[in-house]
Length: 153
Length: 166
Image (cartoon, rainbow over all chains, first blue to last red; front, side, top):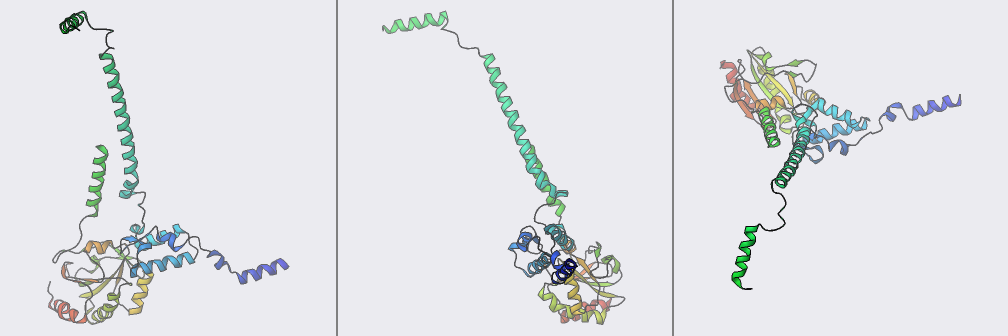
């Protein structure tokens, strides 16, 4: 009975509404990830009248205990997807994620092919040019001897 | 080389998909449907074919919009009806703020909502407020970048409505 009484008192002093409104994010956290659609800058950098309204809207939802994703969804419902600072994972925006990955893979493949070609070229030149002979040919030796004789060393 | 071509292609696609915008005098205005600011459902400029329409782009955070709203409302009360209407388009605005603006100024003319500004872009607006007078065939007859005054409405718009002018 005592516990029931305590629960009733707690319910009166701390209604469920206020418990649910515990902030899950902050204005600064959200405003660093969304745009001011009119200014074309991050909301955290914008000071225009429209940005002030948007910040007040975000602050109200933060106060209601909404999560960052819920607040971003609410902003998209108001302003469309262009309010999001990060590109979406679909449509043309997907290229912002895909192009760097594809460019990196192409670069790796090109580098690997280049190294392979370079190594094969080295092996072919090794086979084509056998190691130098132990000494000069007889004709070269004769010519060398004749030249040396002329200098009377 | 392939990567460079891919990046260039994507850039070109991005630029082309953005497209050019804006309508010139005599050209037909865009008729994409938009949600109504109040009451649900959607509306389009095509719904007003056969009537003169003064399209007013506005936003609740825009101070000049507050200054022109009473003039637009008075003009609507005087001339609105079967042959003419003001049509408000609340652009890049919070819907709750927009509805509060309509109530505050007692605006009786129809209101659509352009949250992402796509229709404003199609019209070629450079800000708010901007006003586009469309003739009964939906073609642009007058364009005012900035707020309209009662004098302008009486001197430039009203004669076109009474004269038929299409």
